[in-house]
Amino acid sequence: MAVKRVVVGMSGGVDSSVTALLLKQQGYEVIGLFMKNWEGDDTDDYCSSRQDLLDAVSVADVIDIPIDQVNFAQEYRERVFSYFLREYEAGRTPNPDILCNSEIKFKAFLDHALELGADAVATGHYAQVREVDGLFQLLKAEDASKDQSYFLHRLNQAQLSKSMFPLGKLMKSQVRDIARQYGLHNHAKKDSTGICFIGERPFRDFLNRYLPTQPGEMVTPAGKVVGQHQGLSFYTLGQRQGLGIGGGKDSTGEPWFVCGKDMAHNRLIVVQGHDHPALQAHDLTALDMHWIAGVAPDLSRDYAAKTRYRQQDADCRIAAQDGSIHFHFPAAQWAVTPGQSVVAYDGAVCLGGGIIESSRS
Image (cartoon, rainbow, N blue to C red; front, side, top):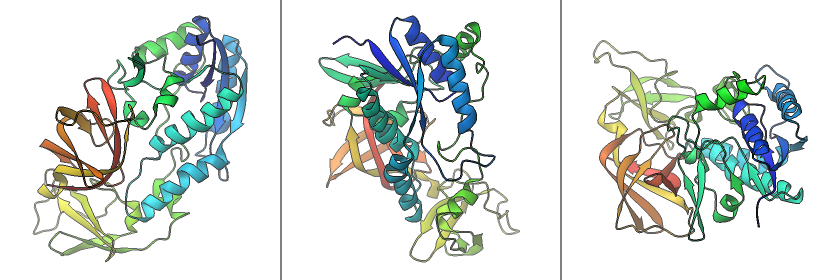
């Protein structure tokens, strides 16, 4: 069936606004939908949802499409935020934006759009979808600096078959130029940063509302105490800022980095120097692996993967092993972090990914 009616997730930002504009110009019946995913403390200085809604409504008026608002706050708390807290409490560093995409933007939102009679949904993500021999592939965006396939790697065939990403072939600069050309007032609006429900608020203060603070010792791998931490949940591997310790007289004077967590003894393990061996890993194990095609690719081949967003793809070998997936990188990867996602690629094609469980040098 040909796509005729498209529901666009409009956030008030320039990307989703231009997405709606382009689809309208291409002749689709476009309906805008603004998603509210967080409630409870959205009256303070850090929440921009009210202004974002006003921006989305203003854009919809300019390009002459209907727009509505839908509240997914309950679904967000149940499907995303509860997971977020469990992972941090366990000492891992989750990426809730990935779960938000698979559970909210392309599940709750998609279901709602289909109820509105939509043939497809569209968002302002920088990615592409391609159908090959009846299977839908997720591709990187043309703008490598904005590619968001990493965050979309948990989408399945049913979700991709109903998804459109009109910005996938455009540069960010082109998107802003289009918005400016057609008189969209948000053409220069700053991109949103951070986790979608938190906004640009102090992360430690936010997390402290929901998780207990358990201060403890910062130690070197040899067990030497060099400082005090405020709670293991507040730190992530590779972290440099906010440790509150400097180079001692008997040290190299190099900055300190988090390299591990001793949950049993409530100790944060730190080392000096960005290139310290404790921060390097050639191997990792991933759980909860999701392959976009529904089945694993040919694991006898070499692929590439990234262990964090904005990281360069790194050559790797992938193997199934005791119910988990093992990644081996000939070149060591820096600060591989449990709870984050490792995402595999075959050239421009995103194959899928899993949750990092552990790593070793």
